[in-house]
Image: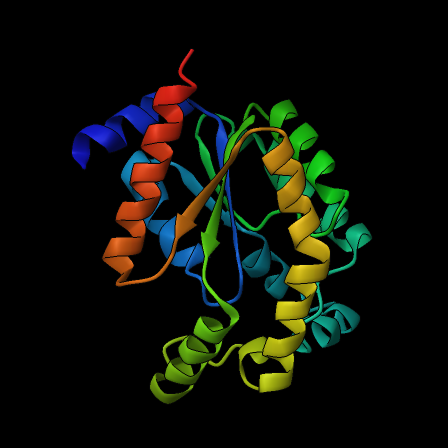
Length: 209
């Protein structure tokens, strides 16, 4: 594992990896651990946008119901992070940055301009049934901090439909670009992380300069 991580780190340089998946697929869990392992900086669009809801009540209402942030809000709030001077020396691990069709071109342009060209996109694959199993388990354990968009089933259903209708076309664009890495996200957190590292390592080996 250590040799694979080292190879991925060297291959990535100051580039970035964007991680997508259905709710409860483990995007932030995988992303945070991967960032730690390769000394990258982790940026979650959800975390950044939820922080912005303290002053934007309209955005808070939409996100609490499971809706994606409008593209104008995404461009205003998220894109500037990709050009920050304090992040320029580091690789970035992105969690679902650019989830609405058309935003992927903005993300790729902003990332490249900031010195963080997107070199791979990971899709953590789980079924809708698995989403509901994990949601029920989270309700019982309370281990997600009672996020507003996690509290009720209707918000989860909206998030699933938003992913299918709005985010899957984004993922198809990355697939067409040849940088998509599908990863099976079933099993323990350790197994999912190992699957991710293996997928990234194989991709990096095949695309090394």
